[in-house]
Structure formats: structure tokens, C-alpha cells
Length: 273
Ligand SMILES: [Zn+2]
Image (cartoon, rainbow, N blue to C red; front, side, top):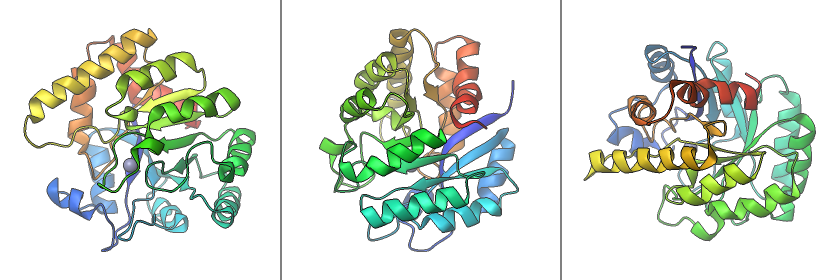
């Protein structure tokens, strides 16, 4: 087994990080040292680092994500978060261009921002992502805060974009939870659409039954799509612990070859890492 790639982690080392409460709940210190040593323990060779939300709802500035990656000895690569304002799109693309070798993808926070996937404000982002061959990750499904906008984070809102932008690689984060069947159809229908399995297990009452339910939903998506070529491993640290997301993959009733695709082969192909 090759080493694993975690395509969805967060970090800031800031007190105003809105994910600190998830870290506390999971008994995590949520520091760069902890993340790197946990990755080593679970044989996770590389990770993609995404901005966490800060208190007040804004994402951690992208240059701080890049700085954290620079301290990771090449084990973390930055994903640039793009917010829906012309100036912010421009700044994000400039930063991506300046760090062309390091940046592996962009992220759009559907459900947290007041724009949908097909909003014209993202046009320049999609043009650039297509020409640079960089995937765009979209938050889909349930939001971490009760103020989220589910009409905009629903996975089916990506169908129109995937139709219009066949050259754009689209990754649906969190498998659109709870809309797994919609995501199964999207990854089956569109050659350019993928889904990650990050941030799904969250503990609480019925945790064991819920973990079974999740595995069943992902199994069914794989059976429906006739393979696991479009499914990518991610933890969403600190929202979900590494051990929990790895246990979810272990639970899947699919060929070992498909588990290898999920754990690293698909990510290597899609992100060029
Ligand atoms: Zn996340």
C-alpha cells in the first residue's frame, strides 16, 4: 500500500479560529506539530491545507495558509479559498500565480457565502483554474454552523456548472452530505466531477449506527457509479479525526483496489501530487 493523501485538512494556530470548538470536542490540540505527527502515525504522506473559518465568518487569509504549508517540510500543500467579490477573486488568482508550484487547488465556500456556484463573480476563477489545470473544491451539503445556506450548498447546484465547464475539475466536499445519491449521479454523469469523503463522521448519539449508514451510502454510490475512480479521501481535520475517516474507508464493502484509489491514486491523478 502506497502512502495516503489527505485532500482536506484545516489549520490556523489562531485563537479566533471557529473550528477550535470542534478540535476541543475531538480532544485535539489542532496545531501544525500535532497534524504532522498524526499524519506520520497513519502513513499519510501528503495533505492539502484549506482555510478554516475565523470567528465572524471570514476565512483565514490565504497567505497564512501558504505560510503554514512552508513550515510543513513539503508535506502540506495550499488550497486557495476564493470569496465572491471581484477584488478577492483577483487577489486570490494573483496569489495562486505567484505560488504556482505549491498551490494545488481552489476552494469555494458554498453555503457560507452569498453566491452560488454559477455566480458570474467566479467566472475568472473558473477560466484560470481550467487553464492552469487546477481543480476547484466546493463545500457541499450540511454546513458547520446553523446559519448556513443549504439552497446554495446543495450538490445539484454544480450540475449546471459541470455542463457548461467540461474542462473544469470540480470536487464536491463532504460527498454533499446528506445528499449522497445526488452526488452519486453527479460523479457518474460528469467526467469532470469528483467527491471527497471528508468531515462526515462527527460522533454523538448513535455514532456507530451513523458510521454504518455513512459506509452504506458511500458503498451504494460506488456500486451506482460502477467504481471508485471519482472518490477522494479527506479528513476535514479537526472536524473529524484521522482514525474515524480511515475507519470509514476500512468499513467500505469494495475491492482493495478501489480503496487504494480512494486513499491516494485518485488524488495523485487529480491534483498532480
Ligand atoms: Zn473543510
